[in-house]
Amino acid sequence: ISRLNSVGSRTELWQEQQRIATADHVIVCCARQSAELFENYPALKPIRGQVSWVENRQQPLALDQAYSYGGYCMQLDASHLILGASFYPNRDDAEVLAEDHVHNHELIHNVFPEYAQQLPALEHWQGRAAVRAQSLDYFPLVGKVHNHEQNYS
Image (cartoon, rainbow, N blue to C red; front, top):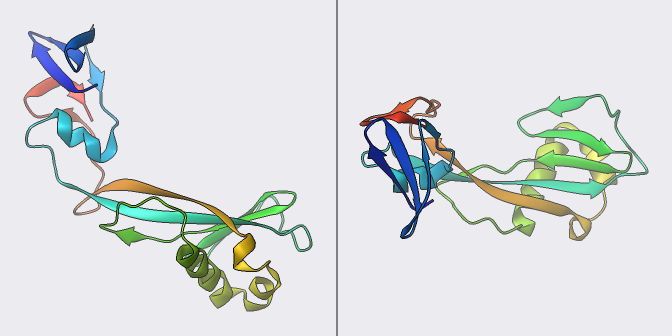
């Protein structure tokens, strides 16, 4: 959707030059791109984060427990540990980076050093990086959009 047009009590959803739909209510869940649809939308900042996962068949943790320690980890399945996560405000790159695997390893090593030393070398780690949108004061943004009473974000 490239724009929203208010027409009376309804909203038209447009993609370029084509009207896709008309609706009584619209819920916009576009993270930072939500601002492209509304004037005066609250400022949002990007925050990059990366989780890592690694094969740990030799030393699995209990499947029904998660650990929180400034980072977090839990057994993903019978043979993989997932752990994380890096947290970089004002970054919007989403490539998986070795330096973030190092960060995630340091987090677990700080609290479980013997366990962390048994994990495979970082070149065998996999990961997923993503960018989330965050309000400047870290409070959630939800509700009707000013001057668009039928639209919610």
